[in-house]
Image (cartoon, rainbow, N blue to C red; front, top):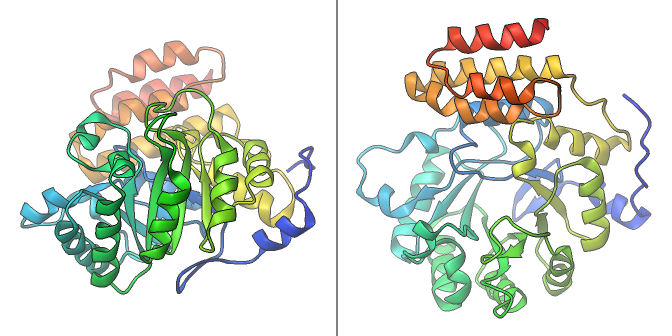
Length: 338
């Protein structure tokens, strides 16, 4: 542990962030959240993040309400481990009735909140009326929220973006509509749908939304370090931050930010060996949980762990072709010993 070189938070903001985050009747003892990430935030990944951030809210991968409507059994991505708390299941679709049904199934699974995805920019989601396309259909978004709020007794939250493109930044009106329909917290990724994940997150829009709403507003976008999180909080006065791509191959980030907010100190970053040991654990966890499919999924995760040290590119190439835990362990052990 080393002393912080990052400017301290303003006293007013520090006082606010020291209190629990209240999402309706749910109380969270951390102001740092792990974003839902498709193909990433499964039970294995969440377990690694939670080791360093035990009090932070975690999210499942987003679940299609349409697919859930037609399935006899719940999909694996809705699986929640015993005592996995706090946890939220994220849903997406454009049909209020399907979303209400899906929300009820999520509550039966043990979710603490229901999160509605209104920000995904991927074409296969938006062309069917889900994700960020709802920013262009605020009346539909309102109907979805009302249906879900009426269907469940847990808080309902929304994750969205600032607008469809630079000509359609409508987030302030949209956010107010969400609050008026019963949303208990709004997470804002400060990019438009057209930006995707390119360019810089425009945190100033989060500040504007925070001023316009009375419910908690969580800042999302370009949170890759403790320093970025503190800068974002100072600019936006948000009620917390949500980490997304910054945790790919680095499940330590949520805990590092959470630790700083609680103590004012920065944790020493993990060594390369510690990161690679974590990669081994991630690989084994995916194998034990998903079998051979987990091995194939592990390739991208292992590649994300391999950056920022000599030989990382070569190591990525080897790990991107593994067919077994034993093969992955052999490659990683060789890198660790060297």
